[in-house]
Picture 1 (spheres, helix red, strand yellow):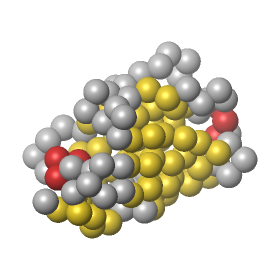
Picture 2 (picture 1 turned 60 degrees about the horizontal axis):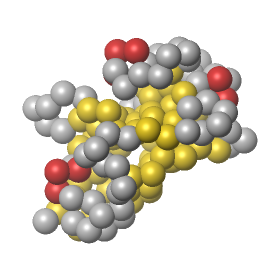
Picture 3 (picture 1 turned 120 degrees about the vertical axis):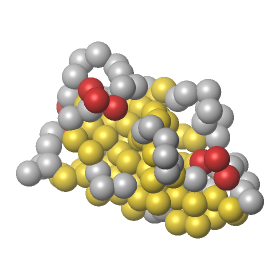
Picture 4 (picture 1 turned 180 degrees about the horizontal axis):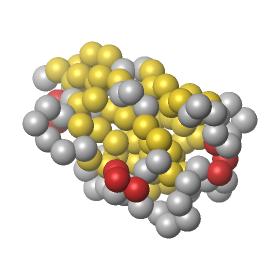
Amino acid sequence: QVQLVESGGGLVQAGGSLRLSCAASGLTFSSYAMAWFRQAPGKEREFVARITRSDGIPYYPDSVKGRFTISRDNAKNTVYLQMNSLKPEDTAVYYCAADRGIIDTTTALRYDYWGQGTQVTVSS
């Protein structure tokens, strides 16, 4: 049974930082690309960051580039999202996701497994 469990969310002031973690179990972690998405109330799920399987190459959309950093530790079956210079518009539920496909994708529907999400709230 595959499980992705996020942690590290919370309330932070604008300009602050948070580090999210996602612990994976029940899958061969190093065989999956990993990603973070977020969803704010009334909005569609939005791609935030992705990291490749073994060489750990990251990819970000312009909205978070330079502020967020995704990383992974294959020995710990964990993916991280370091978020700096947070803005109120970063407020959302953050989800990690696993993709076993061979084509890099930022499309949520292409991901195979999802965590339950962790709330991030940035106050102004």
